[in-house]
Image (cartoon, rainbow, N blue to C red; front, side):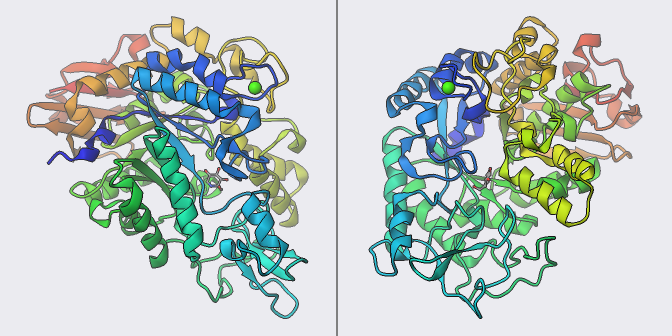
Length: 548
Ligand code: NOJ
Ligand code: CA
């Protein structure tokens, strides 16, 4: 059955982290006119939707994820007119606009919060979550995601407010109907302005247990514990459904929820079509956990499980990267010996899965993690906290720095590498965050001219997806290869079948005889520079798509 919402299945979504994309006025900070100047590049890549990380007014405690004006543009990024120009240019090119929607919390500099904190009886008093001290202390033992207590004291009210993220990101009180009404109006305002969809930030925590019981989780080095009962409460699902029924569904707006959903059942609660919540979801896994626990086998298991669970009644956001994760080629691939081929491999694997692919800025040229020499060089508040917690736990400064370098969200946030000059062609000024020195070798300019670059591999994949209904919409069937690192599956519609092999390792693996007979006409290969598929052995990180 085709529905009105089926347009979302034909998207390839490019995520822009505006601060680091392109700086048009030389102040060292990426901006909206910078995006406009690079729109032809994105059109050439072939993507047809952009998700913008927050561009709203913000004091930048968490780089825009702390909003002080929902209907204003951050001055460093430009003006509302710049945004409108960009919108018009996107519309002209058929590129959909997806805005980040951060409504679990605002900035502590938002006028609502300034009013709310001023006294116990003002008309915004209930817009945030206020509690009295208990025995002269914070109301409970909950940790903030960015370190320290999740509560902050305000003398004017002689009360604490709750902040799951930094203390400059107070949680909005969704139990207050007037607040919900304001949020709905704001969302509608953006839809009126021509926005096609939203990526909805940290949406699993809207409803709070009103008695705020202590967490039983083990304490962090600083003594506070992550709340174990905050994510995915029934009340949160009710608030999401309310938004869907009032806004998203009637206005045909795409929604991608960023959710905390450790099991496939919990994921399904947000994205099964029958739930009427989100079209797709980005499950959040703390990088500190993922780095230590991921394996190709686990990845494949999760993909299989969520495919089975949602194939009749749901859809998938497919991503390996975003602004919160290490660079994908450094995390899942090999950014040294197999840099190019493993970056292509990851792209081919992801873009052949059912679901909507996401491309995070720079992944299309194989940008890698960076190692900044000192903790002072890092900007991300999460990184700084991790370093602090490491020291508290007894690590040496060297060890704490090494750990922070590995996990830091700044790995994904170094400026886009446009050319081989010292500042990577990102800015003429001083970049707000260091440019990765490997821009000398890894940059857009070089890869645009090279027919076998990672960039060309992305172009080929995106183009193939547009031609192939099997790739965009087809069913998936897994094939047994007898090897955990050799992944094989088909994608098919009644008229078309594609067969995929992905060798998720630096070792060679043979395609089993029984599957080889169908491996005839190769369409794309991660070894295109070497002349393509040779078979029957698949080389390190070799990925091949066959037409059957
Ligand atoms: C998730 C965002 O992706 C992340 O960057 C941010 O720090 C938190 N939510 C808080 O908004
Ligand atoms: Ca700028």
